[in-house]
Image 1 (cartoon, rainbow, N blue to C red):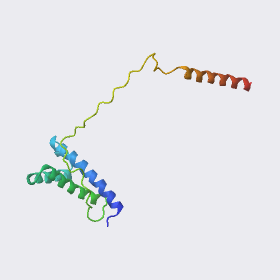
Image 2 (image 1 turned 90 degrees about the vertical axis):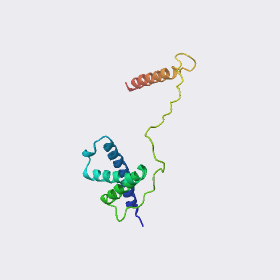
Image 3 (image 1 turned 180 degrees about the vertical axis):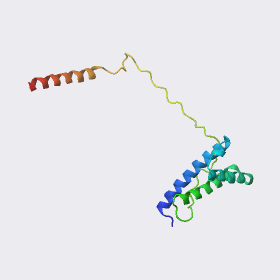
Image 4 (image 1 turned 45 degrees about the vertical axis):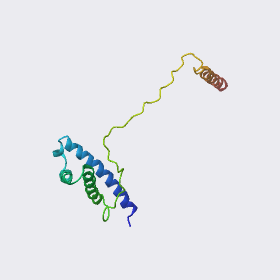
Length: 140
């Protein structure tokens, strides 16, 4: 039986593994893999070997699983790393998000019927003046 603590460690390890692998993969594409730690370079080498045998998506998931298991033990997980439910099964083809245009704002009327009345502000100010004068009058 998997304890809640181990499941929490497993989720954190999986999230970290996915983020780190994406970073390492991008660094490799930008010819910066030599700046990565030795462990990251080892995982990238195993990823390149897996690419020769399977599709990119399968190789990525297999490498992330290896990194996840490594992180799980480093983070203090007990026993074998539990299986984490797979994320979206569809492969992401790009990182472009479609943005919706915000709705057009209605133009503000300068002096038309939709203009806010100034009376409440003036009334509040006048009441404050009356309260202040009354307070001063009764205190002396």
